[in-house]
Length: 300
Image 1 (tube, one colour):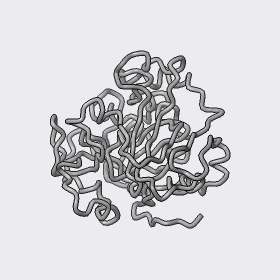
Image 2: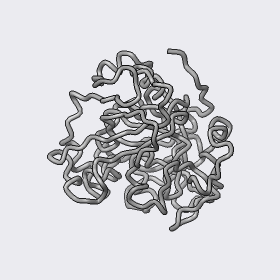
Image 3: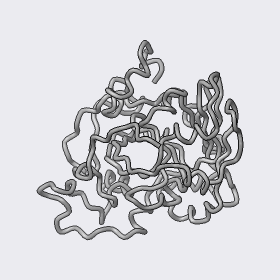
Image 4: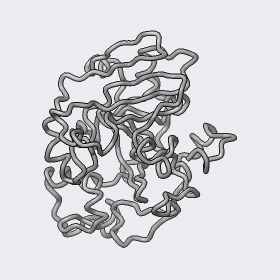
């Protein structure tokens, strides 16, 4: 399949792996976490002991395994990811259950180095391995009447202890407009830093939409539905005042509890100078046209 997007970021821009996986510990100033600059800077990791794999994957958000930051690493190993399949249905020509192995056999896996931003006003640069969502949807044949794409995370209470509590309305769901889903920047990720995604980070298959906040990038996807109606999304359903359907990075629209006008780059240190947040997370040239004529303070 032909590559349809040209990367402008390089390996020199990438956030170090241990800082990416332990990013909340970095922001919280927890002991043992390196706060030096990115590789190539004058302060890059000098004199710091690298964290172990266990340490760097032990502070995470995946509420299906619990709301504590160490819960996903503690409990996610119970998640069965082999075999895995994705149900694609709704307004498609070839609805069905697609085995993960068959999907991988037909996709061109490539590395995409993307800026990635959390709603709590930090950002990073991540090397994702994966393929364009458009290529996956083409397997099922998108019908002309489809206007939205809905996604659903696996729900297994016997393997996911967090789902035994009504923290959210399970299963976790997300959605995109069809033009957002078919955009070449939108990918299904299968790896990080050239390695398979850990279970607590969304194995074996997760969405990545780099111009939106990180919570839009739904983990461990088992169902994709094409529809002509805007689908519900978990955080919007839980708190519509704070989490809109679109959830585009927009420095002019603050979260009700904090400003989005500036951000801190992971790896620059806990007290690093904040930098202005870029519209659409720096991808305005590529995606701003998707929202021509829309009031982005209303459709946030």
